[in-house]
Each structure stands twice: as C-alpha cells, then as structure tokens.
Amino acid sequence: MLHRSADFDKVRLMREDWIQPILDEARSLGLERTARAYPEVGGKITVDGNTVLNFSSNDYLDLAHHRHVMDRAREALDLYGVGSTSSRLVAGTLPIHEELEARLAQEKGYPAALVFGSGYMANAGTIPVLAGRDDLVFADKLVHASMIDACKLSGAKLVRFAHNDVQSLKQRLEQHADAPGRKLVITESVFSMDGDIAPLAEIAALAEKHSAMLMVDEAHASGTFGPHGAGLIREYGLEKSVTVSMGTMSKAFAGYGGFVACSENLRSLMVNSARAFIYTTAPPPAVIGAALGIMDVLEASPRLGSILQANADYFRSLLHAAGLDTLQSQSQIIPVVIGDNNKAVAISQKLRGEGIIAAAIRPPTVPAGSARLRLSVTLAHHVDDLEHAAKAIVSAMKK
Image 1 (spheres, rainbow, N blue to C red):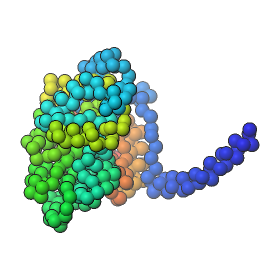
Image 2 (cartoon, rainbow, N blue to C red):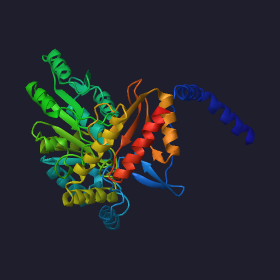
Image 3 (cartoon, rainbow, N blue to C red):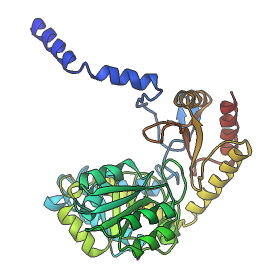
Image 4 (cartoon, one colour):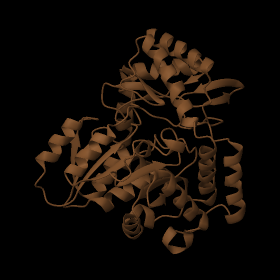
C-alpha cells in the first residue's frame, strides 16, 4: 500500500510539474497572492487585541454588523432555513426573493429586477443575453474582469475604448456604424480600482444616437451615491437611457449577491436565457434578508452616502497635500499609485505593522506599472482615524 501511494504521488507530481515555475515567476515579479485570514470584517477590526484600521473593506457604510440588518437575516433564517435548496426555476424561488427584487426595482427606478448569486454571476449572466456572436460590445478599457469574461462567453466582438473617454467611444461607434447585429456599450459608474466616475450622461447620449444598448455596473455606486443609495444612474436621471443597471449586495450592502434592474421584457428573457441565473441554486434566504435590512437602513438614513463621500473628500485632500498620486478618484475608493510591484507590497506590509490594512493591488488587476494601494474609506473611519492613516501612508511612501 505504501509503495502504491508513493508511486501515485510521483505520478501526480509529474503531471503538475508545470505549476511550480508559474508560481516562482509570479513571486519573482512581486505578483504572488495569498489569502490571509482575518478575525473580523469591517473598516475597524481587532487583531491580536489591537485595533486595526482596515482600508481594504468594501463595507463602505459600516453596516455588516448593523443590528437591524442582522435581525432581518435571522428572521429569514428562522423562517426558511439555511438554504434555498434549489435553482430559481425549479423550486428555489421564495417570497423573500420576489420581495427584494420588487424593492430593488423601485429604488433603482426600473420596472423590474432580477437577483443573481453574485455580482460576477450577474454580469456573466446578463451580457451574453444582450449580445451574441453576430453582435458588438463596446467596453471601457478598465471595466471589471467579470464583464470581460462575460463578453468572451457571449461570443460577441469586443471593442475597447479608452477609459472614460467619450471621444474614443464616439470614434469606435462611428467605425462600426454599418456593422450588422446589436450593439452594446458597457461601463462602470464608479470604477473599482481608480475610484473615478464615468461620464454617464455623455455615454448614454452616444449609445442612444447609435441605437446601442447601455449596461452600467453600479457595484461601487449602489448605496454610496444617489437618493437612498440608489446609485449614479438614478442621481443623474438616466434610468430611461440605461438598458441595464447592475449592482451587488457585497459592497455597501455588506452581504453577498448581485442583481440587475431592467425592463419587464428583458427580465423575462433573462429568466429564460441567462445561464448564470438558471443553472445554479438560488441565493440563501439569510443573504436576501440582510439585503432587505440594508434597504430599510438606507430608507431611514438617506444621508449615509453623502457623509461617506464628504469623509472620502477630506481623506483625499490630506493625501493630495502630501503630493501623493490618487489618479482621478472622486469616490470612497482612493488609489495611491506606487508603480513598482515589490515596492507596493513592501509599503503595504509596513503599514500592516503599524495597524493599517491597505492592500497592494498589482497586475493583472490594474495595468502594468500602476501597482498601488487601494484605499476604501468607510463610515467606520472617523476623522481622527483618517488623519492618522494619512500620516502613516505618507511616512511609509517617503521611506
């Protein structure tokens, strides 16, 4: 038995001998990634008895431990159990799923909404429904990886335009004006790594002029911008110009899941065609209950997003005053560009030793040569926390 086990291990190692060189190269380039376990979640956590400022959390509104949100999750857990136990089209659709979809549609200003298992699945399920092999997708150069993967799944021809560059999009649309098939423009409203905001009104006008559909990923704008956290599409009054408003329940909503808001017809089409919706178990009831709790909080406290943005503006001004490069950030996401991968990791590690979690983001998540600290301001961070963190970041950058 031991002899057979050793032979098996030897064969397995031979079959996987291609893996180690890839890992070694990533390590040499400063691109190795590891999953580190933390004892808590949120913008301010306790590690080994010490308070740590976490600037790598997406719990922007500090609601992950909100009592009402947790109560709504418990109520759903007690009523329905731990899981939905089936896909939505078999026996997994519960009243709580429909309740959340109705509220999301109302808040986003659309006739309908559809909940997915995650933000990634929402993009992966929706884009292939909107565009296929005979169609064109025009994508901002910095859209999220899930959107790019969805374009590949769709088989549509992918045309990239320069980041937040309306003129670049105009040129691409004009170049393909006579192309057959459907046209789809995709962008984010708040970009996840740069923290800047897309010129949505101009993009929507171009899409309409060229008879193109428009899908906007509002993952980082939902909860943090717009009335009651309804996002930038709602803030700018673009609901009728944007075909699909996509969002997540894992950022400001502090939980898990994704959704799209759209027309009734498009929702019906996705129920029948979106593989990421059809071929997976429905999201667990407690997750949906927590999302409903978040919406209750946003309705009762509509200024949370405004307070967050004011705090982010102040933090950004402290970094600017020290000459740090935060790109065109206009949101709670503030990058500090370093450039070199290994330097970014070293600075991140130094800050961790000083009680500040600031993840080093490197390629391929961001373009080569633009490694950075990605700082997320949350409502767990008070003014003195922001001032302390700014001083520590400036000091670490100088050293």
